Length: 498
View 1 (cartoon, rainbow, N blue to C red):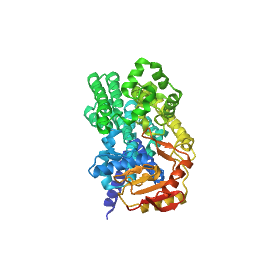
View 2: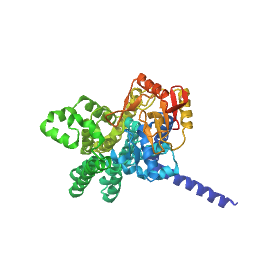
View 3: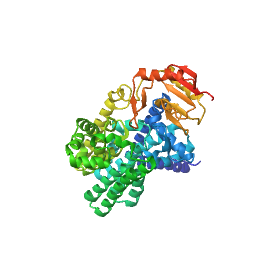
View 4: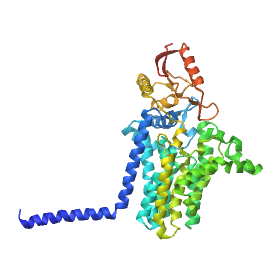
């Protein structure tokens, strides 16, 4: 090779390296965001996989979603075994047909962890619209990058990702994309994304309706905005008052959470007229304030500078009126239609500050959110983890006993199980919640799992250890059942032949 050709080749390599370096420099903020998404998604999935292998992700709620997806592929769309022991479409309680769109993933990877991974990946990708909003409104790639990291560092997002899995959780990234498309006046893209968001749950219509009001008033697109508002409201009305009653042969089972304020949507409205103090006392109760404070603190409350944050109020009001602590627990999925507006509202709120303050304030939000994650995040020993119902120490011996129990039971036979082990049996038609037996042919009872179905509401309640032990003793003396395994508090029974 001549010196000229050598020089030319060297020049080409130097030129290519320079172009790559220039591209990396130009897109370094985007690369950081994608790196953060990949790291966050990988870490969250590793945690979920560990929880699943330790039998911490149970029948409620991962098993429910697995059964609905599996049943859809078997030709019975969204069929579940209800907590009562009856067979019905999932639409009898929740209108979240987005589960149907997950069925192709099950064909590729038929594992409950596939659904958990899909939820985590979707949440991670929610950082992108946050980044895009920041670039547009903050005028700084650095500030935009920091806000996308603040979203991923938001401690309650991590809890929601690990709470595998709930269709409504997919609404978090979808609503962020909805905000982005409306902010860009891309109505066709918004309609497609909004339709997917609505398919995540019956109450998402309230969030879409509120988003439409924001678009009409804050962006001056009144005709389109109020059309969006009407569409969201109609969806929730149809879902709650037409779809659920038609499938469930009655009202929504979740109306039972509103007995104190009327017991139904119409009852709540009647109470608001006849005794408004009851409604006000629920809306402004101390636990509602603490819930709002928990959601606001990681974002330093900066979303109050943007009217977009008001889009979270309808959903917040719905859960404030409900009985029980679950809906007002920031570690659970109920915040799905609230967080997107707080995060996007924070970006828009910061944009109201002086331009020179955008990046420093965004950095402060990252520090605050990360600091609170270090205290309240889903890691062993954190204060927020110690009281969460599925967080407990599981010995290797107990896991081994559960593994042997799972291996004993044939595929697709009707089964009744304790909650935590039930997540491993969900790809079958009949999956009863012990002590409901139905037409079960096998029973797997874990006496370390104290969570049993509630007789009144579609939830689980914690029972005393003596009560669960009594149920195990009763099963051992029942002549209809044969004990085939007893190890470390795990019992497997098989139904005797007639």
